[in-house]
Length: 203
Image (cartoon, rainbow, N blue to C red; front, side, top):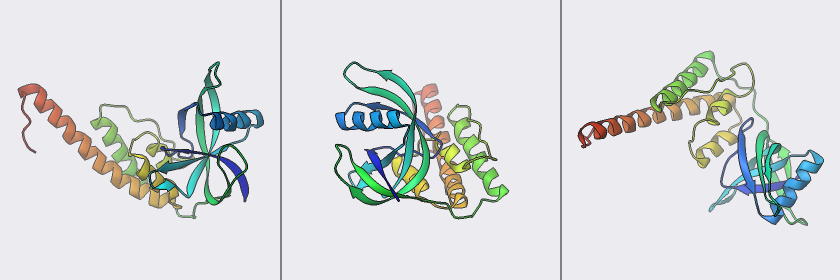
């Protein structure tokens, strides 16, 4: 158990994922400034109208893109270990909390489950006319690597973040990707039909 500074946001950061952030509020400029000075992580936690989630990700600043004269920052952060919020603490301008590490159970996906997930990922990117990012199946979480490149929305990413089994993540993600591939394919077909005859025929 240890204390960490929190940065509640409307996004979910997965382990290994990199995202850009614009830091403008004074309290978060203070938080990020301390993290840069000490080489320490902060806790990024998904927050929306339903409140602050219990599970978050340690985030480390890996690059400072720009510093503005008024103290604002453009940075890139990378997700590290997951944690569970135990108790919110006070005494600082920014939110802080006591946290504990959230560890995975020792349950791994089968090769067939991994291949199904990878195939569905390929179908999604192909349907969108994009090139799939390379996935290293020998290192890290396959599910997190793929989910970092597909926009499922924050609530679904939060669900993946909270699962404590890589097998559960891979199986769930495969289903999400298969449905997404079909949705993208149908939307693309509608656009193509509309561009050729000006009408959209029901599927």
